[in-house]
Length: 440
Ligand code: GLU
Image 1 (cartoon, rainbow, N blue to C red):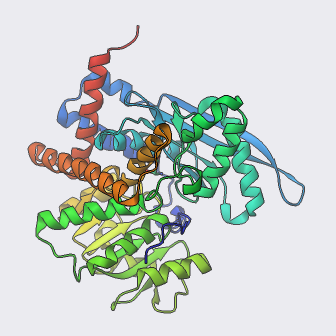
Image 2 (image 1 turned 180 degrees about the vertical axis):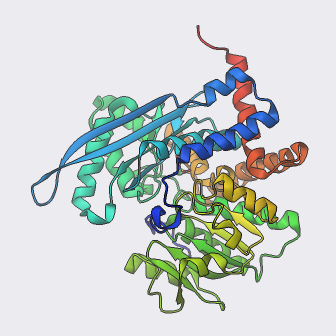
């Protein structure tokens, strides 16, 4: 049985400095390179290019929190709002030691493209706190979250900017945000404002299917890819990097297809088993132990061996910049389905293309999360509660519509899928800007 109520925290792959080249690379540079390639190819209006090439607001807050031992610690929190021409700013919050402005800027921008591709009325934003959640007690995490929400003040709001879970954040953290936010607004506005965040616990206005939504969306796109290619998912092999919410749900949802999970990596190490790893069992193990390494039915392997594992599909579902000019040559797969945001950098992408490895790009592949966030937001606004079948059917329609637009655009522009996904997003944004004009 699949359990909807199991909240697996997003897990991270190894710290990036161990995998990426020693020099710190700007993640936003990846966005700029991807954006420029698509804008050149589609001949995006130069004025619109100027607008979309910048973030609208960048909020950095420093705030104090009293820790369990009585000492005061200062934290830095971020919220970057890239664009809201299609609707309110929207995007997750991540808690990670490496969160910084350049990363959040890139992630916020990808959110704008994601909503535009799938045609949902949201803009793009992202935020987070630079912190190692493993080093905090639950009480500390609650206080940090509440103090961060308070510091953000009316920079977030149900019709303005709507956070959601991301790496190392979950429905409990969303519940603390709602509670804090509602406490700061007038009592008669509170009931009508629970859609200030999505990814809430179901009892508190969350949507059925939101917890698995990103993984479900990844699987829907893989199914469609397999259908288009005449590829049989039964018996197909795959590997997963990151076994948090996204990675574990992808694996659990691929199981009924008869596909075989043969290697998994997380921040603590990698394991493999050519006979197959049971996703449900591994999920239970990770919930209990907080890590993949040590799972008794898999043999430990090193990072390079993990990347070299021959499989049909690789699903990166951890952090960014994992598939680079130096790691892409090691991959031995037919398809990369990007559950994570930004797992492939432009150098890695070139290598994948030269080697004929197909990519379902992040801004399409992992958009199931924000799509079901939109459904949660709608349900809250209309005081409705949809059943899981309805959520899944609507998610399937939205993401497959997006998939087909990207696939057809890749054909008509004779380009790669990421560039095609950008063209779909940028065309929509360009049209809206042209219709609205620029104030004054
Ligand atoms: N954090 C998820 C993402 O990167 C979901 C965002 C949302 O639901 O707003 O797409």
